[in-house]
Length: 222
Image (cartoon, rainbow, N blue to C red):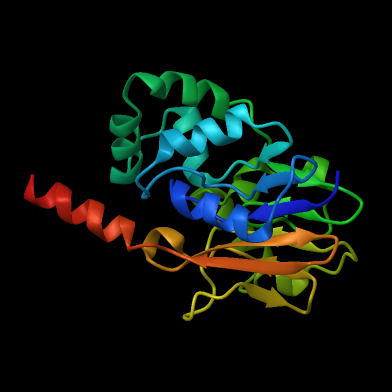
């Protein structure tokens, strides 16, 4: 593999995904890793699915939105919209999502969607914590007693995650040059960001619009 290209929460924003990959100038030899939440809130979930399902050298880490689809949990409007947009393709997408992993680890980096429990090997991590489900967040909050997981994390291996926009200006969150938060709010009109390994260089492209607000507005008037 030439590089590892880790991409933050895509949320169905296919156009920005392709624009970002073109900006990075990815090649067939690069490993493309999505840090979870590839669906919901954005306009093109089918195109995002087709990209990762059809292209070689791609990995999808399970996010909390993805997990809801895989487990058949549909409490939120965003999941119901994605199901409707995908139509007949939806069962195939759900089956594919169920086979995705909850983390990626190499000699250079760990990739999770939301968090990890410091001091625990990756093989023993709880899936709910890794993907950022509400139950997982409650467990982690109780164990860490008010601290964020990355404040306690002291392993030498860098961690890249998504899940939550950490900065008001929607730039990637970097903690002590060891923990990198790359959800920069593309579906809310922010940016889609990626980090390349081994150089840890960050790339971003601006969202074409605030997709989630537009979708919610359209639904309101229908």
